Image 1 (cartoon, rainbow over the protein chains, first blue to last red):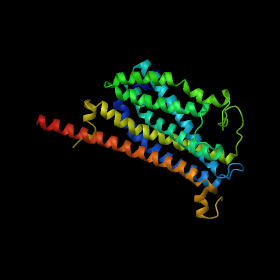
Image 2: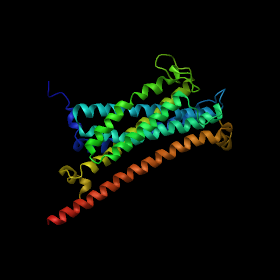
Image 3: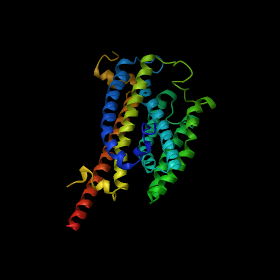
Image 4: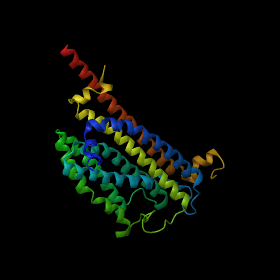
Length: 249
Length: 60
């Protein structure tokens, strides 16, 4: 029985994960490119013009997936933080730091595209609305994580401090998600709900979901690529690094 | 098909600035991130190779 169990802790070793990540990222990058091509085609050529917002609504195809991604990546970071604190695995902190810049970027894209959508539809680039403000706090949490972990020289201590920030900050994610329900916001309600049938046209929904998949694949690919750099930086004195084929003269 | 001509496509029904500003900045920032990550990896690898080569020479 015990022989059939996969030893997951084996993958938590940077020496095992480094080559695995190297083999995996091109597949995710390729899938991401394919999903982006289909998603963009639906966004511009299949999805019809909106009867209220004209062509301006097409921003939805990146705004909503990028916002989802910014929240989801933070949850994944919190999960890695919990694993890192519980099992004291080295890879957890490396994965968190590999994800943080991409999460911050998606939070920025969410706010940026939101401003460009808000201006023509609401008449304002920015309002201190609960949804917008909590998303801005998410961006600050990402930047705080990056700044804090960069300020601590010992990587293991930096990981621990970062893990605490991720776990405390994750409380903000449900606040963003439910903000449109809990408060009277200028921001519209959820586009896709888990409990109700979607209120939008099916082609629009498909466009959004495929763009979300493209962002997912992109995030996985870029995080795997970045974690390889982080592993090399941190494990540079390890024997297995010196024995890597790419390190031979 | 939504568009009669290329210029209509770029005009986005008067929302061109907002739509292309969104898609353009997204594409640009993802591209910049990719370039930076590749650079970080190759810089690290190059520095390590040099370090390891110097170690080997010292041992000989």
